[in-house]
Image (cartoon, rainbow, N blue to C red; front, side):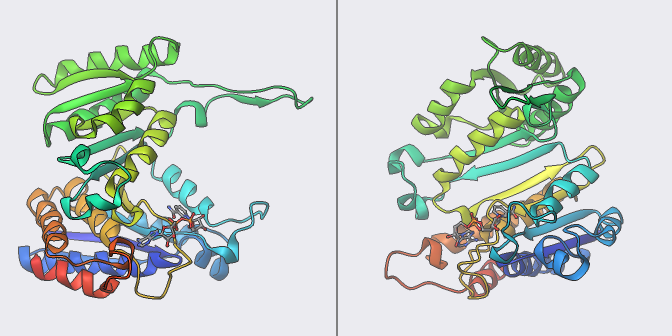
Length: 353
Ligand code: NAD
C-alpha cells in the first residue's frame, strides 16, 4: 500500500526518536512491499523560533494531506516560561483540537527483561499487557468553569453527552475485539450523575459487541487494582480526568518513560502517534534516548491508521526480541553497565523485522 506520513520531530530528543521510528517504518515498507512517503513539518519550540507560533498553518495543511501524523516531543528550557504568550505545548493542544482527536490510546506492557526497573514486585508484573483508552476532548477539563471574583471559590464541571461517551466506547470495544476481548469501563457512578450517564451509555453500546466481556470499575478501586493485580486488565476506558490519572499511574509498570507509545484518534481515521515522554533536554543530542516509545507509536500508526496488523505485530515482536537479547539504552541499562546508542538500538530492531 501507499501511505503519506507527516513527521513532526519537534524539540530535544523528539528529533532523535522520530528519526528512529521512520527508520523502522522504512524497514517495514521494504520487508512487506509498501510505499511510505514522509513530509516533515514544524511544531513546538523550533516552530516558535522559525515562525513565531507553536503550530504554523503549513503544518496543519501538511497533516490534512496525509494518512497519519508521527510526532516526537515539544518543549525545552529555552521556551519554558509559563507566562509567555507563545509556548511549545500550545502546538499539542491546537493540533489535537484541529483534527478532532477525541480518543487517546496508551498501551502499557511489561517486558520480563525490564521487570527490575518497575517499583512493583516482579511476580505482580507477569503478563501485564493493557490498553488504556482515555476520552480526550470532553469532561471536566473542558466543562463550564468559573473562578469567582473574590478568589474564595471556584468550580469546574464534569459534563458528558451521550454521543461523546458512545464514540469513545466504540473505540474501546473495537480495540478489545482485536485483543483479549475484555473491557473495563471506569467511572464513579455511585456518586456522580455524569458518570451514571457514562455507565448507562457504555452498557448500551455493549449490545453491539457481544463477543467482548464488559465490566465496570469505580475509579478509586480501579486505581488500587492497577497496582495489586495489573495483569488482570485488558482494555480500560475512562473519562478525560480519570484516564489522565490512571494512565500515568500505569506508566510506572513499564519501568521507563522511554518505553511507552500513544495514539490519539479522531472520527475520520486520521491519527496522531507520539511517545508518552517529553523532549528530555537533559539527554538531547547525546544518542542516549530510548527510541522504543516512538517505535511502538509507529507500530500503532500501522495498526490504527493504515490497518496493517501483521506489520504492527512484527514491529512489536522485534522490539521484544531485541530487549530479550539484552540490548539496553542508557535509561534501562544496569547501573554502571554498558548500553547501546539510540541508533544502535534502532538498527537492531530494524534487523529483526
Ligand atoms: P521528559 O519526559 O522530557 O523527561 C523526564 C525524564 O525522563 C528525564 O530525565 C529524561 O531524560 C527521561 N526520559 C524521557 N524520555 C526518555 C527516553 N526516550 N529515553 C531515555 N530517557 C528518557 O519530561 P520533563 O523533563 O518533565 O520535560 C522536559 C520538556 O518536555 C519540558 O519542556 C516539557 O514541557 C516537555 N514535555 C513535552 C511532552 C510532549 O511533547 N508530549 C510531554 C512531557 C513533557
